[in-house]
Image (tube, rainbow over all chains, first blue to last red; front, side, top):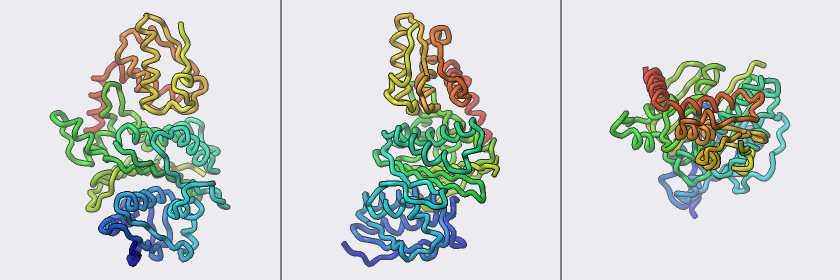
Amino acid sequence: MSSNREYTITARNQIVGTSINGMLSLINYYHYAKQYRNCWINLNLDGVNFIDANLSAFLYSIVYDLKNNFGVSTFIDFKSIGKDLNVLMRNGFTNHVAGNGYQFKPYDERDTTIPLMVFNQKNVDDYCDYIERDFLHQRGLRNIRFNDKDRIIASYIEIFENVGLHANTNDPVFVCGQYFPKQGELKFTLVDLGDGFLKKIAEYTKGDENITTASDAIHWAIAGHSTKIGAPGGTGLRDIFRFCTQTGGSLHIMSDDCYYNLTNTTTHTYKLLKQYKGATIHLIFRFLL
Amino acid sequence: MITLKIVDIIGSKNAVTHAFGVKVFDAISKHFANGEKVFLSFQGVKNVTSGFANGSIGKIYSEFKEASELLTIGGLEGKTVWIEKIENAKQLGSNPQIAKVQNNAIYELLQS
């Protein structure tokens, strides 16, 4: 296997944040690497001073997909990265990239990291345990209202459940989070490598509403519609949307060529020139400290 | 009245998947077919999603006009969010056309 390639992640202000710009910084690596077959690529993080640790889910899904579908292995020299990126060690990202998977919660002296996890879609019980153990016991959440805690748990679980129902993939689901105590923000990222929103919704609405764009498909899903047959459905994503607008939270959905961003009560959609597979969802909940 | 415990039907404390919901629907509908009333217990359940509520209770309300007389639900004390999901599921199941109109209205609003 050849190993003479290197790619340097570049990011605006050297920050890879939970935003369209942050995601594009990582998607650019995917598009570079998938041109090749059966080789190693050295992924250089020297150009990054800070990365939102929840994005480990997205970056690891790229590492996984490149290996699985193109035979491209990613090497990251973690000894050379700056100390602000050591969160990628604390949350287990380095273990996953090294092929060790998740073995134990890495020691985290700040008690703010949430481990990167890879779940089989059928593994609902383990996923629920992870959410309760690793998300809801963050120190900033210990004092939030009980109903809000229930809604947060429900939001995370609804998104996972939607993958099994709609994504049409046997690939695993990648999940990670990070608590930012200074900002009072809890960030969550879930990635699936399935069909995305548009394919199934376009098929379902053909001859009726005729949804043909990714942004319309996302709006359609958030409005409460569902492609489920034989039973009512569609309220999970709408409930999350409503909770975010009521609490000043954010919901980002990246699928097909659309990046959808709801923050507070304002929504923006962006057309992506470079796409990634499946759907990536970020949830950002905000708490008064 | 027969008591059905969700945790026993689905074999998990996490009532979260649509498939689990359909299992519960199947269990309830067998008794409804015999005209029996059912008490559906959420005792021991740790998590509930809309997907589960819609696949079980929503589907029951969609297929059995007499569901509100035959089905009693318990074990929801203090679970405001679950109660909301279940009530939504009942409404969605009973009035799919109204739900569609509401969803279309929200969709139009999101597009504007």
